[in-house]
Image 1: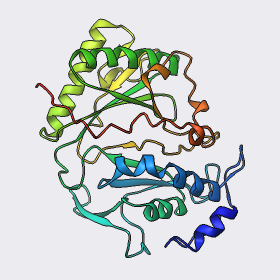
Image 2: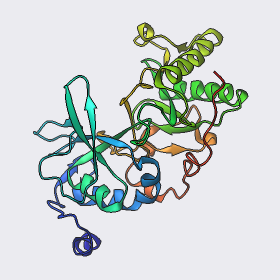
Image 3: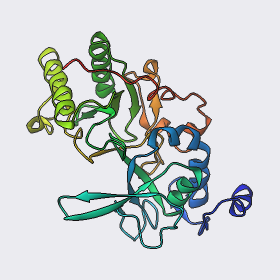
Image 4: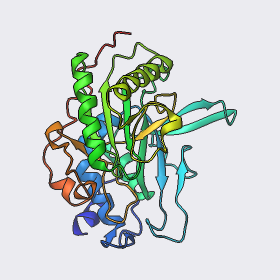
Length: 293
């Protein structure tokens, strides 16, 4: 906590309630959450830059009396120095002022808001209608396990590599895995969603454990390759975001050799991920891919 006291004089953020416990099972405080996001900022900021963010805030922590809530619109009292972007919402018939996090102070401010989870869309504010990321959500349905999801993710990787694409993978921080490809933003969401769906259909024909259709998502023992998130302003949890689990798990980028049946999401948490020096997603956005549709 001594480092955080020093930080108060250096950051624009007025840090509050740093001793408040947010993960009671493992006694993780708000101050430790702020410290975590500071340490992970060099890995987080390049990927979330210029993306409108959606927060899940936990005012009293993961087991608190105050309910967690989603927040798209910048809250009342947002500092003037926090960058926001007005984006029209057809469902609410008004602009929503999304937060844009391009700097450390803003990331610290998000942590100070008790935004344990941070979510991002698959396009940037400069080209919202054309995604620069392709997203496969590999989601096991009980009794299928994270081990089954790992096996399906490896099958997916092999298929994408045969197509000349370079997939990246991370844990969801819960029961599944996320596979992502960097794109040249030339195609609309309808096209990218159809591409992801078609890959899932082909894998489902080849492997009975794979489900490619929404109607099969709750079929016991199947692993759904979810394509539906590839839509305007749909999101995924950002790499290195905390999750609201009792063990403070983290949605953690992995090297592909780490994806195996024995994979345990609880091993990737607020303590272990900081010590994990590698950054498997460091090159994600450096070499955008071209789809052959």
